[in-house]
Image (cartoon, rainbow, N blue to C red; front, side):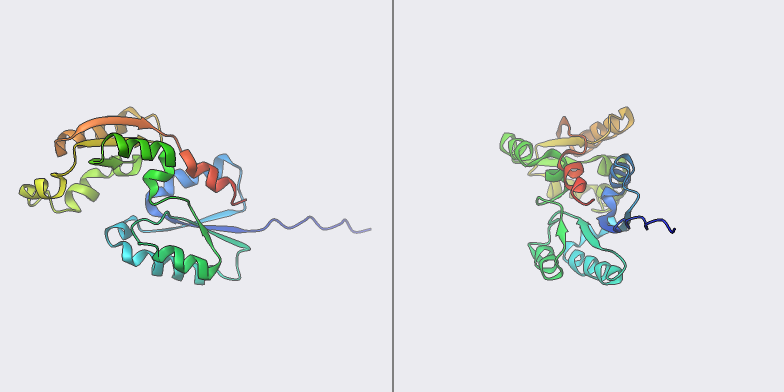
Length: 202
């Protein structure tokens, strides 16, 4: 007599910002989500956030029919609601919050940090790791250091929202604060709301 067939496991695709790739892989592996595939878009899209909705939409279109569920690991990320409008039409959910800083810190803690010092510049592990390339070179400060007051003159504090307890990243984040002439504060968030939101994907 043939055995009853095993129930099929639904395949899930997470379309993610490349800045969250390391954390996403860790959460998926730690959670034993072997049925979850990850597709990352370039983190450089944040330099032109108006391009994020179209890039995500293209990736959704490519995945249709191959996955039972699609989830987007982006916050609004400076799209001014355009990402939400597109996702609503596609019937796809995303991470909560305005940007990854709020996702990692949690809404209440992020509001507290903003109230303490409105002029706060934030780093995550990803940005601490790639500070020179994404911030200094990305803003042209390696070529035109005289522009630093123009970009950062309204900031007073750098807050490092750390995901990992990594002395090397802590030192890099502190050096970034010194480089920008800002006071330094570390807030260890771990994965914050990121892990909780992804737990609903399965």
